Length: 330
Image (cartoon, rainbow, N blue to C red; front, side, top):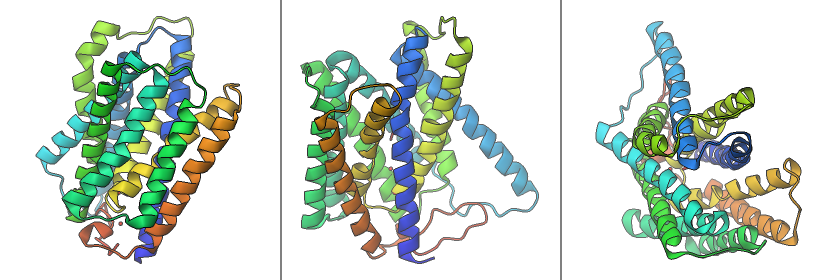
């Protein structure tokens, strides 16, 4: 497989993951309206449900292997899986804490805005990945678009504790992305299904107690709607999106990954306008244009980039051999 086709596939995985993450906010908003679940309980059930889905997929794959399919050539190290899961948990829990303390707008801007900066610095000084002048301009444009998109409505309230939690969330996201990218570069990324299952399992264990304190079971008259929304959250923006995210991150430069994933707030904003009846403002339009322009520029640059070592190949999977040429959420 050529580097161009492998990179294109990895970039596609990341774009789909970002769009899927963007739908999680709308689903969560509907859940909060239909029940008394809090953010920690919702996060726990999202992780626990995602784990059930992933274990089901792994069980089906194991049965197929029993009929002669090839086993993966790379097994993820337990320490690597645990670290990824812990960073995933920090990212999730600190973000919801930031939103609770300082509001959705500021929490989102600080988390998603600081993430690309931390990742770009970590990738530059830890892995020698250079964005170049064009890439740096694209990152700056993406951050400007994010600020306009999320803060354009006004009414934001900045609280130091919330900002600190948002920075902690961004650090967890950055560490998860950089670690996955570095593992992929060494050809040690392992099985993305297993990595994702471990991540959500660690998240569920860490969130169980605080979720129980908050209130684990929903009280609602619309139990069917709540169950359907929870099933969607567990399947699409969790199990599917994180598998695609880990698969794409192993092959794409870390800073590029972080900017592509800013498609998430664009997706969320468009859903809010088209499906939830929110008003389309000039800030939404301008922020969306800036973000998408930066994402397109970085995708074009990534597709032209030469392959760089083992990570450029696909992470080995069932029946697949390592190939020259192949990126680390929500």
